[in-house]
Image (tube, rainbow, N blue to C red):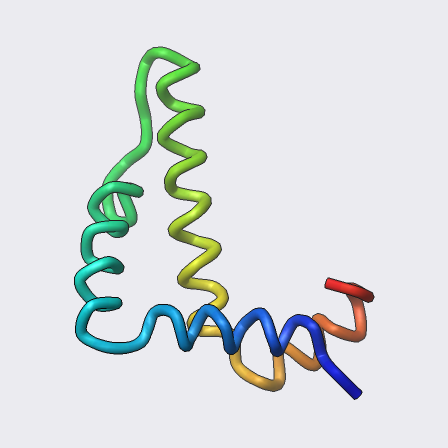
Length: 80
C-alpha cells in the first residue's frame, strides 16, 4: 500500500540532501530564526517571525521523521 506521508518525507529528504542542500538549510536556519527568539513587541512582527519559524520546524520534522513514526501517523491521519 502506498503511504503518502512516507512519500512526502522521502521527498523532503531527497531535496535537502547534499552539499547545496546543506547551504540552503544553513541559510534557512538563520532566516527562520531556528535557534533565536522570535519575540517582538509588535504582535504582527512576532506573528510573522513565528510563521517563518514554523516553516523551519516543518522541514526539520520531515527530515527527522523515522519510519516507525510515519507508520504511526499514517494510521491516525488518513490521506496526509
